Image 1 (cartoon, rainbow over the protein chains, first blue to last red):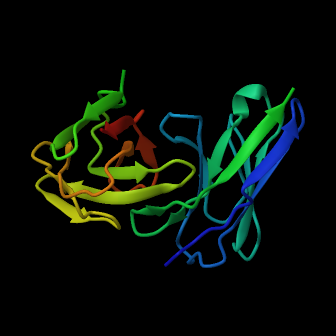
Image 2 (spheres, rainbow over the protein chains, first blue to last red):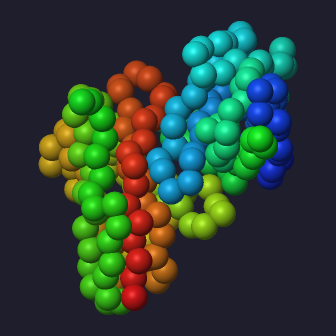
Image 3 (cartoon, chains in turn brown, yellow):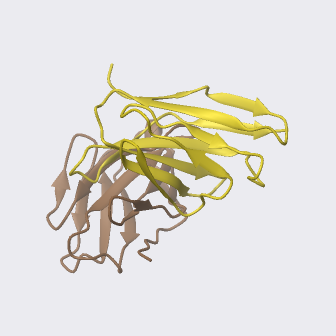
Length: 108
Length: 112
């Protein structure tokens, strides 16, 4: 089964960039890389997705390695409200497989 | 406002009782999903439906049932056969032809 791995936790100082890695070595050629975040006791919030090229939107940037086996989500100027669990689920055919994500704590 | 609604936010039931969780979307999405989340864990897929009157089992379907009689509604019934029903339940939907899923706010079910 497709699977992704992420570090269990990270800290980041407020105002600094948060770089969250994801390993998706089993990804197939036509599967997108997705990122979501979940603030405590809420539903996951879509952040960004990409296939091969780097992507940027108002929330974050996504850097995908050339071999597509890993990616990095970048929050350029982290705020306290970015404290959450960040997921990069493996995306099968119209299904996601979630791991336990990375718990990001933004420190004042 | 367009979106996904789940009600209620908190639900309490006695052991042995069936309970139905509501999920409604007005996004005109074709596919809908139910996930379960336990403390400190990721989401696990219970059931999904890609079209009205059709649904498939996910990874942990035992003890659950669903129906998809209308495009906008995908209720989940937690039956008495589900051994550990206390969890956070999340509904999601997706537009046909796209992979991005959008999630509702969740229902926290506690079985006493």
